[in-house]
Image (tube, rainbow, N blue to C red; front, side, top):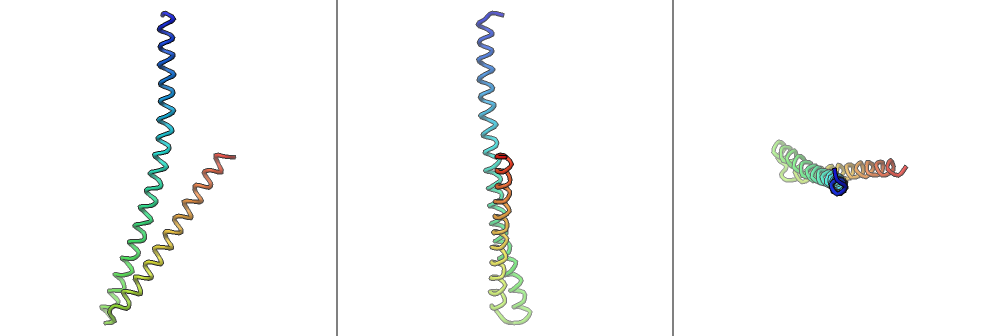
Amino acid sequence: MSERNTKDIDDIAARLDSIKKTRATSEIADKRRNKGLGLAMRMGMDLVAACFVGGFLGHLMDQALGTRPWFMLGMFIVGVVAGMRNMVRSAYEAQEAVSKEQASKEG
């Protein structure tokens, strides 16, 4: 092989390595972004589901006891509180995971 061909091959190999590093970095960023999006979707669905379940159970209690709309409103509020509690707990757990990940990278 001539010296020129060897130089061209080395140049191509260097460019391929650079592209691989860039792609690996972007894939890590995409995974983190998707993980955050999944957490946000889960937190939102937890809140909506808790509100719906609380309101529905309150509605059933109102029908059985004939006290419309008091149990529905009360149970809806209980559902909101439960949903918010789940959201805060999920956010706390996610923050703890990020803190542990950063601590393991640093030391």
